[in-house]
Length: 243
Image (cartoon, rainbow, N blue to C red; front, side):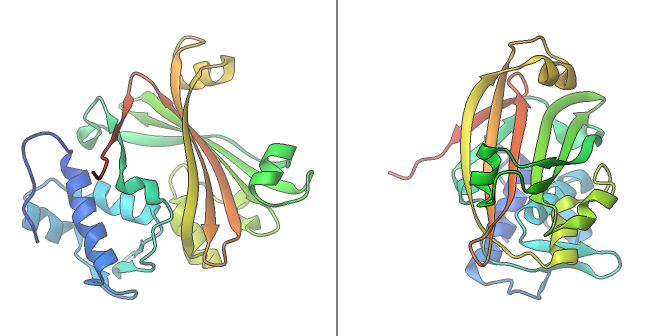
């Protein structure tokens, strides 16, 4: 494996993630293969366990791997659900590798699909959806709020699980065998309304980065609509352009 750069331009966990990502995309690791464990990554790249774990979590969030207790981490797809990940990075202004991070479930309920979300998920207006709203904290300070929508009929058990401690992406892959193929993503700036200001502990009308995404399965069916609101003082976008 290639060596990591220590010049500070790219965080170590992202470099480890990127190397593993390229190995999966190139076919070095085939579907069904095991990828190196956290302990192996620590030894190979001389990184902390938190850094190795963060890289593995990114691969799992992409729908590329799944980790099972006592069985290691297995490749389950070689098609990323988020092609923009290759050119856009969301960089924290604080070092989260050494922070204590937790998620808090704010809302877990059903709602009727409004016209906008129905269109995003190719469903009739009024169709029953599952809505999850979670806030992620680092050292007890919130840095983003994520709101997910799914058709209830398709993933009913999502209502019954605690995704403040369990990985939503892994649950969807293991329980419903969803194979993510691609996603459409929009990034825009907004001002925090009262609710988001309270959740993220910022002043109303503070700048936020909103990332809106529709994720599709391998049959090109839109299965998830999610909007993530990042604190503007915690994140910035860095874009690499091929010339």
